[in-house]
Length: 363
Length: 154
Image (cartoon, each protein chain N blue to C red):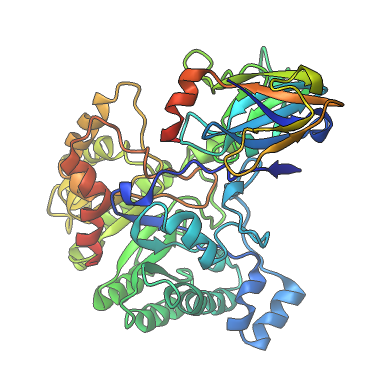
C-alpha cells in the first residue's frame, strides 16, 4: 500500500502550457458491460451467453495496458470516466480539443451482426457519456468494416453530428484498406465530410509483423509501421484517393519515419510498373503528400535530433501534416509537454500542437 | 537540511511512503529493512516514479539463459515502465546517462533529533507538523540546501 502524506503531484501551472489539439485520446470501456445500456436485450443476452468472439493476434501489453496514475478514484479502468479524464488530463494539459478513439472490439467481432450492434452502441455511448458532458471532445465513428452495409449506415447516421470528425479503422482489416470491399465506406465518408483514421494495432487475424507471429511483445510494439505501409500503398495504388479526392487518411500511433522511404520506393516502382495500374496517373508520393496526415505519438527519436528536422523535410509538407497525440491513458502515451524536439521552430511546434489539426478537422 | 519524514515502524518492508519535503515529492522505501529515498519524478517524461512497482532484476548473458535476482530493488515508473535501481537511483535502461535524484536516509532515535524530542518537531510537510517523542526511532531524509533553494520550481 502506498501512503501519500501530501499531494505528490508536481504539475506546473496549466496556464503556462500552450493549447493543444490531441488527435489520439482513448475513452475506454471498463468492461463490455459499459455498452449494455445502449444494446438491445437480444445482444446483451448474446454477450452473456456466447461472449465476444474475435480473432487472436493483438495483445496489449506489459504489466499494464494503462498508466496506473490515470486510474480514477473509483478503481475503474483508466480513461473510462470523463470527469476524471477532465481533471487528470484535459484541464492540466490545456487541451482545447481532443479526438476520441475508442477501442471497443466492435470492429474485430467475428459475428458481423454483433459487431454492427456494438458499433452503434459504442457511438451512442460516445454521444451520451463523452460528447454531451465535455464540449472539448470530438469522436471517431466506430464501425465494423467487414460488414460494409452496416458500416455505411452507421457512417451516414453519424455524419449528421459534426462532433464526429472521422471514421476509425483498426490497423489491420481483413483485407488491405484500398480493396473494393471497403469503398462504400469511403463513399459514405466523402459524402458526409468525414476523414478516415487508421489506428495502430487492432486485429483481424493477421499478425502485426509482415513475417508471422513474433515471440515478444517488443516486436509487436515496434510492428505497426508494417501494416500501415501496406494500407497506405493499397489506398494509393487502388485509386481510392483519385475516386474520393477530398478524403484524408490520418495514420495514428504508427510513427512517421517510414514515410519518406515508402514514397521513394513507390515512385521508383511506378515508373517501371505503371501499366499494371493505369488509373494511377500521378507519382504515388504526390498522393501521399496530399492525403496522408500523421499523429505524433510515438514520436521518432533519432539519436541526432537534427535528423528529426531532416525527416520532416523529406516528407515535403510533413510539418503541416503532423499532429499532436497523447495516447492518454495508455501506458506508452506521451507527455505533450515533452515530446517535441527542441530543434523544431516555434512555428512548426505550434502547427503540430494545434494549427494542423484545426485546419484538417475544421475546428 | 534534514527532515523527519516518518517513524521507522511506519513503513513496513516492501512498502513505501511518499512525502513532500521542501517542495519536492520524495518516495521513502523500506527494502528488506534498508531505507532509500528517491525523487518522485521520472527523468523520462515526468511520471510519478515512486508510485511504481518494485521488481527483481532480470539479467541474461545469452538468449535462453537468465538470472533472476529476487530482491525487489528495481523501481519501475508507472507510466512507461522505465526502470531505476531503488538503492542508487541509477537508470536500469540507460545507466550511462540517466539517474533519478536520490537522498540520504538515516535512522535516528528520538533523543538524537535536533531540536531534541520530546515535542513537536517542525516536519517536512507543507501542511502539517510531525509529532516526535524521545522514544522510538525516526527516518530522516537529507535534502541538500541547493536542492531546497531550487524547490520552488516543483
